[in-house]
Image (cartoon, rainbow, N blue to C red; front, side, top):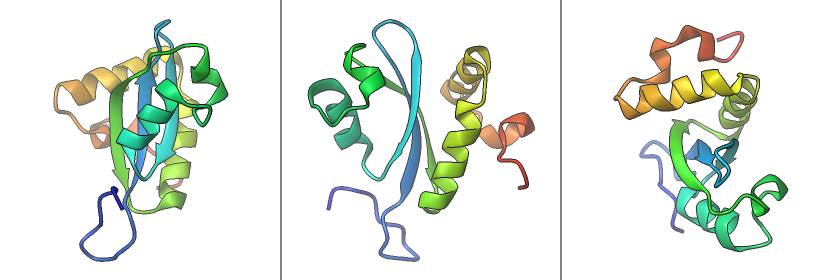
Length: 110
């Protein structure tokens, strides 16, 4: 298995990721294997319908989550953001800031 194993369990880590498409738009998804998923977005029918006509895509953001449920909730929260807020999140991560410093990006109820 190519995915990262969490030390406390044998289950793979889940990631929320954002890719930038060739047309400049952003796509958010979840996976246990980012390299495989980016390859799928760029070269196979398994890539999301949205990204198939906007290739190539480039990874611009990722977060590690405890499990699929947490990743899905975080994906939903990010998808609710405006494109401007998503770009702010991406830029903050490029500067080494964590999403934890942006309370408005947190999952509701947590």
